[in-house]
Amino acid sequence: MAKDATKRIDLALQGGGSHGALTWGVLDRLLEDERLEIDGISGTSAGAMNAVVLADGLHKGGRNGARDALHAFWKAVSDAARFSPIQRTPWDRLMGNDGLDNSPSYLFFESLTQLIAPAKLNPMAINPLRDLVLELVDFERVNACRKVKVFVTATNVRTGQARIFRQPELTVDTVMASACLPFMFAPVEIDGEAYWDGGYSGNPALYPLVDDQGCRDLVVVQINPLVRQKLPESARDILNRINEVTFNSSLIKELRSIQLLHRLIEAEGLELESYRAMRLHLIHAEHDIETLSASSKMNAEWDFLCRLHAQGRAWADRWLDDNFAALGEHSSFDLDAVFPDTFRPISSTDTST
Image 1: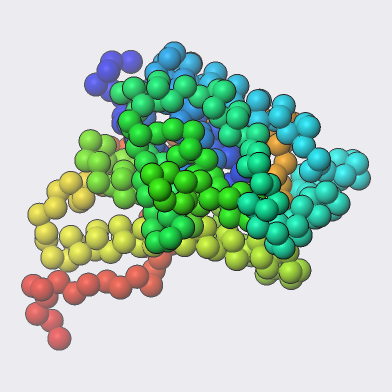
Image 2: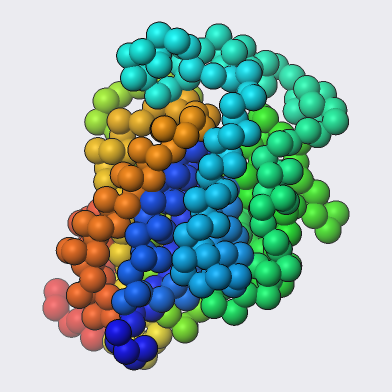
């Protein structure tokens, strides 16, 4: 295919623990399609890990290098998890339950993290995932990569504000800060400031991609459900739903802001062509997401990750079939349908009463 026939996209990747393997599947399918060129990626937590692994592999070996790097990363995550004391019970394995809600070790660890601060629970700051990322990702290559821009979001503990890390300042610490869950790990200190998981302030942050006018097609890969039809009943389900709402709130606010900006441009006839041309797209499958339990985010068994990868590929495949033609032309994600209650401004030229 001719170079001028490719379509450029930005990607916004959510965090979600092991559910990030869904995003791995999406990326694997998108990288496979030579009609697409990934211009920029904004990632949080697992989304940030996917982003830096992709950039490293892309810089080293192009599309196939990125696909191989993502496969190697998730396989290494699974291999490392085999030695974790937090595992599914034999009964859950037999019944095909991917969650850890019945695992005594998971329940004990969950209770412990609610009672003891991470700095006291883990005074040596042992984090096998950090060691794994440091071993597998060459951050010199990530920062040198000119094929894709990478933005990583973390939350400043003191101010509560998002901080966006980008090339050439990306390190293992910026990625681990983006994935630092407060009840599990002590804050990651960078430049004298402490950081927690980026999901609290941007899951993922869209504005670095919106501000980057080099590409106007923004694709959100959503792996956390906005809607759950079944109301939570148990205390654990309530807490999990609160976390989902909290981690989705920043994304919802940014999407509403984009919707309002579009409406203002339309109502006022503002000459903001760069924003007028911005096109939004969404890759997800609400039913698939809703059936995954929150505790399965801690399940890193290879069979489970491979199933999530296959689901993610299927999402991307369907999305490409349905929406490839929309890229470069118009949004395929209807914000007005999702947020029908957003205030619609009255044009200053509207004289009707």
